[in-house]
Structure formats: structure tokens, C-alpha cells
Amino acid sequence: MDKTSVKSSVELTHEFFDMWLKTYESTYGRLLEVPAVGPMRERSEKAMRSFSVSVNLYTAWLESLVNFQNVFIEAMRRTREKMVTEMEGEIKPEVYKDFYRVWIETYSETFKEFLKSGHFSSDMGTLTSYFVDFQKTNRDLLEENYLKPMSLPTRTEIDEINKEVYSLKKAVKELTSQVREISRE
Image (cartoon, rainbow, N blue to C red; front, side, top):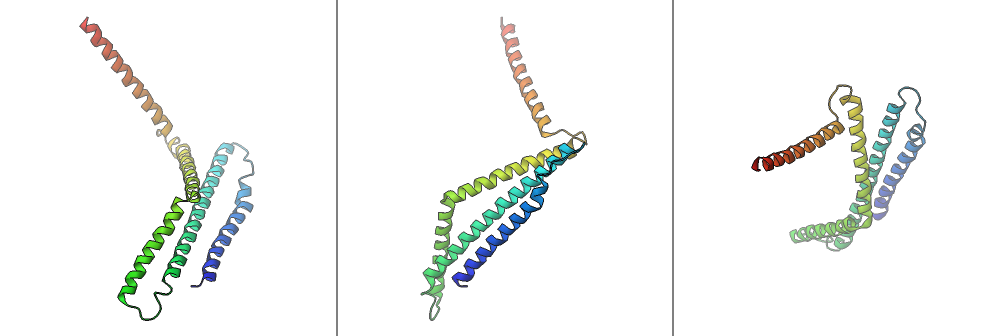
């Protein structure tokens, strides 16, 4: 595979992603801007927000994949440059050993460079942030649409109960300490 075909496949991936994002923004993205009305307004707004959060996560994930694809292609290019002369002529087992050594070293170096870059940490930070938003939104929808209607405790209610139990244990411990003090006197 020559450099131009590799470059064009990366460009095609970027073009596809950009086209997908523009299509989303011009269709579903506009639906999210329409204000909800009526008795189901709040539930509808939460569902639309959930959809938007899901798309943000998916977009960040795709951007990460594209970045890793670029690093992979760069590693392949570097390996090919290092091995182009060694792979000419008669190929012996030692050449394959050298190829594997160069291949592993080149890929390791290329990915280390990428993983140490500010771009990678920023990319992972964005992806993680969108993932946390996605989890929170899904938890909220689960609580509202399934747990509350079935009279099951929600995470918030369980957290409140845990705080109350902690306070009660602390109070019992203090009272037990005071009772011991009084009984010694």
C-alpha cells in the first residue's frame, strides 16, 4: 500500500465522520432545539438531553478511533521506511526476526509518543467527561422511568438512608460513651 492510498483512506475516514456529524446536526440536532410543551414536557426534555449526551459520547469515541487510526498508519509508515531495504532480495529467517524486532520497537515508540502527547490526554479527558455525563443521564432516566414507578429505592434515596444510618451510628457511639462515663461515676 503506497503513501497516497493510506493518506486517502484516512482522509475518507475524516470525510465520513465530518459528513455524519453535519448530517446529525442538521437533522436530529435541530430536533433537540425544539422546545417541548405539554404535560410530558419535563420527561421529553430529559429524553432529548439523554439523546444529545449519547451523541456527544459517540462523537468523542469516533474522534478517538480516528486519532488511533492515524497513529497506527504512522507506525506502519515508519516500519516500512525502516525495513524497505532489508526486505529486498532473498528473505531468510534472520530477516523476519529483524522485521519483528523493528516492527515492535517502531510501534511501541510511535504509540508512546502519542500516549504522552497533550492531544491524547485532552482527547481522553473529553471522552471520559462525556462518558460520565452519559452514565449520569442514564442513571437519572432509569430512576425516573423504572425505579420510581415500581416504588423501588433510587440511588439518591439509598444515599440519604446511608447518611442517616451513619449519623445514627455516630450518635449511638457518643451516647454509649456518655453512659459508660456516667456509670463509672
